[in-house]
Amino acid sequence: MCSQGTRYIGVRIAVFNQKGGVGKTTSTLNLAAALAHDEPPVILLDLNPQVHLSSIHGNPPRESSRSVFALYAHIRPLESLVKVWPDLGHLIPAHPELKRTLKSLASVLRRRVERR
Ligand SMILES: Nc1ncnc2c1ncn2[C@@H]1O[C@H](COP(=O)(O)OP(=O)(O)OP(=O)(O)O)[C@@H](O)[C@H]1O
Ligand SMILES: [Mg+2]
Image 1 (spheres, helix red, strand yellow):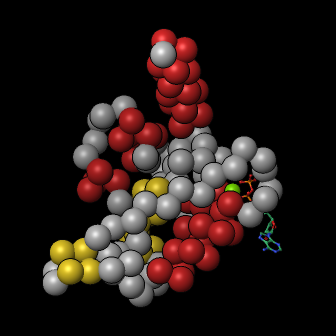
Image 2 (cartoon, helix red, strand yellow; image 1 turned 180 degrees about the vertical axis):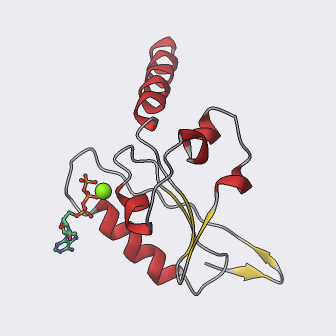
């Protein structure tokens, strides 16, 4: 990461693979740990309805409105969803309800691609 004065240039890293058990969660945690003492600060977004990463953080939210689901549903501002992850940075936790959201996002994207 690089910075110019006080203006930080952020980088978004997506860790994804359709296959299960290939090390996505482990890699995400290790990446976050490696970047934790750099700028800008690390913020983890758990987009997996299995909530593994959020469970490692501890006590994933019971209500979907307290999770990243709320961002897609436009019911809460991002700042209100962020949890501190000591020594790592921050986390916006997942919720099983995301499964439904991700399915509808996938069909929206599929329709857009088919229209081209
Ligand atoms: N580099 C590695 N070497 C050996 N074992 C690893 C490595 N990375 C991950 N593992 C182990 O592999 C297993 C699966 O890892 P992990 O949970 O990170 O995968 P995942 O892709 O997130 O799985 P899921 O699809 O279920 O979310 C875990 O037991 C983890 O400890
Ligand atoms: Mg995982």
